[in-house]
Image: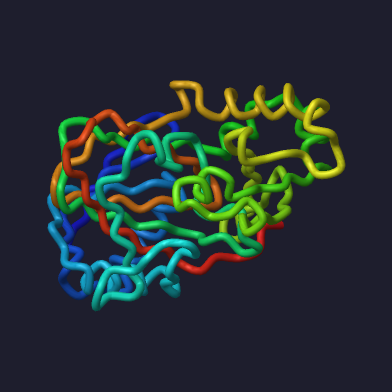
Length: 264
C-alpha cells in the first residue's frame, strides 16, 4: 500500500489516495497517515463509501469514539451520529465553530463519511495555528493570558433545549496542541463565546477581530462533497463551517468523534 498525500491549499488540508479505509490498516501506514494529519490538520479520503462499522474501526486507530452530547446515535452503531436533512433556519453549524467546545473535554478528532450529497452543502475548515501565529508578538502575549467561555447556544436552539439547560465550559483562548506542542487560537462564533472576566462589550471587538482573522480566505480549505468521501479533522487546531446552500435537498453524513484532552 503506497499512500499519495497531496496538499489541498498552502495552509490546511491534504487529499489521501492509495488506501481503502474498509480494509485492515497496518502500523506503518497509520504512522504515515498520522504524520500527514498533524501536518495538514484535515485529511480527505475520496470515494471510500464505507459502512458505519468500518468508519468506527478506522476511528479506533486514532482514539476512543464517543457519542456527542445532545445528539442521537445511529441505530446499531452507537458511536456513529447521522447528520441528516438539517434545516437552514435551525442549523447550529452554519457558523465557524469547534465540535462541542462547550464541554469540559471537547473531542479531539471528527470523522465524516458522506452518504447522500446534494448540490451544494460544502464544508470549510480553517487553520487555527496560522490564525494565532500571524498575530503580532504583543497581541499573542495578551491572548496567552485570557480564557474564554463557550456556550452551546446555537446547538441548544436547534435541538430546542431550554436556555437553563444549555451547557458551557471555560477554556484557554490559546490552546497548546498535546501532540505537536504548537499553539492554536481557540475562538468561535461570538454568539457562543465571551472572554471570562470581561463584559461582553469589552470583549466583543477583540473576539470579532480574532474570528475574522481566523477565517480569511487564505487560511481556509473548502470541500465540495461527493458521495463516498471521508474527511477527518483535528478539532484542537481547526474550526469548521457547514455551508447550508442546498435548500430542501437530502444531505446525509455519518460522523464519529473521538475523546479528547482538556484544553491547556
